[in-house]
Amino acid sequence: MTSQICIQTYLYRHEADLAWALLDSCGIVATLTADDAGGMQPHLLFGNGGVRLWVSEDRAKEAGQLLAAPFEGEE
Image 1: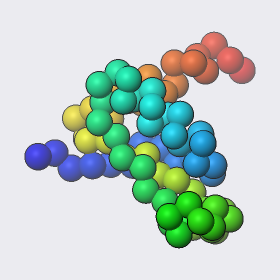
Image 2: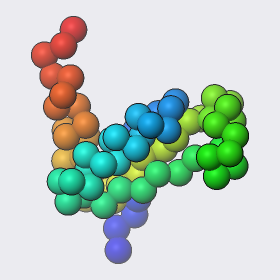
Image 3: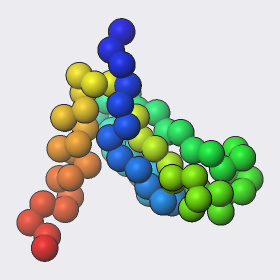
């Protein structure tokens, strides 16, 4: 089993959910972690580093490219 690495951090859960859904739709297993009392206290995300998106090391490059694709060419 390969280890997991955090490839992205989001301040808002809905942004993290969208990124997770994109990776899932492309067959990449991803996990979200957040310290916000199970979603009951979202304001805790601001002081605890946000929502972290984790993928396996062997899929990290592919996942990063997929997440960056919509923004390519924007300045």
